[in-house]
Amino acid sequence: MTEYGIAVIIPCFKCRRHILDVLGRIGKEVRRIYVVDDCCPEGTGQLVQETVTDPRVCVLYNEKNLGVGGAVLRGYRAALEDAANKILVKIDGDGQMDPALLSRFTLPIRRGMADYTKGNRFYNLDQVFRMPKIRIFGNVVLSFLSKFSTGYWQIFDFTNGYTAIAREVALRLDFDKIDKRYFFESDMLFRLNIIRAVVADIPMSARYGDEKSNLSIAHCASSFFFKHFANMIKRIFYNYFLRDLSLASLELLLGLFFSIWGCLFGGFTWVNALEQNITTPAGTAILAGTMIIVGLQLLLGFFAYDMANAPTRPLHLLYDDNDEDNDTSPTKQP
Image 1 (tube, helix red, strand yellow):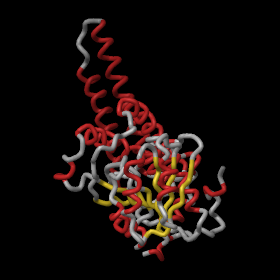
Image 2 (cartoon, one colour):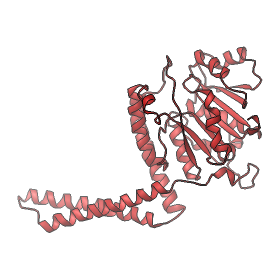
Image 3 (cartoon, helix red, strand yellow):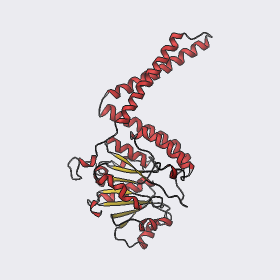
Image 4 (cartoon, rainbow, N blue to C red):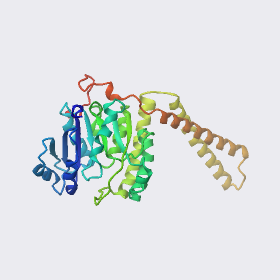
């Protein structure tokens, strides 16, 4: 499958014990391998450079730690400089992701069925419960929030870092705007929805050994919530008001109006009646309740439309990386 131009990007930070095993399990179908040393204190990049003789391997060094997103984007930029790299696959260097699944991740892109594929560890319930319980809980919560912010309601396990992207799609992303830290995977999906790229889930199982995660659940819980909320607002504004206006746009506006007004009107009249020690008129209560119910029904109608509005036409089939309208090439960015 080398004719498909598969390039693998491996961000490295504190994965010295696993990186050689990961590289040794990458098959011959891969054309290039970019190991990105993200200012690793264990000297992972130097170990690879001194030990690995595979001519496909290229070691890149970040002068300062940019985070997993920054390291992956550095690898993307390097891979995109070589026009022969048509599909960019990202796997971690800690051994949790099986390189044998590479062909499974690239197949939907090669067949023109998707622009971007990502792993999903929640297909097999028996294997799900092998995951640490804190990861199961965190993934469920973050996946729920990610559905709202990215608009990809049909996928799950949004924080999964085993991904593949078509070259033509990667060229149309503004790398400078993508989050460089642990929000990277979710922010990538948000950016992909904005350009209307097709995303597909790939069933997989993860391997858990003695590796330690650098992710702080407590720190990310609050920051992720606000980032998801901001992305949801931007996505809805762009897709339903700036790019296009539809019945869903009207449902959203009226739904918010009736819901908020019903709550404010009902709450004000209830507090006023409580202060005056009188009974709230039945008509007032019914009116407030009706507004809230109508508002919720309109909001449900909007989200039903949003769920059915996921991109279905692969973007990379419409473009060639030499097209004149390709003005967002990350290789031209600093």
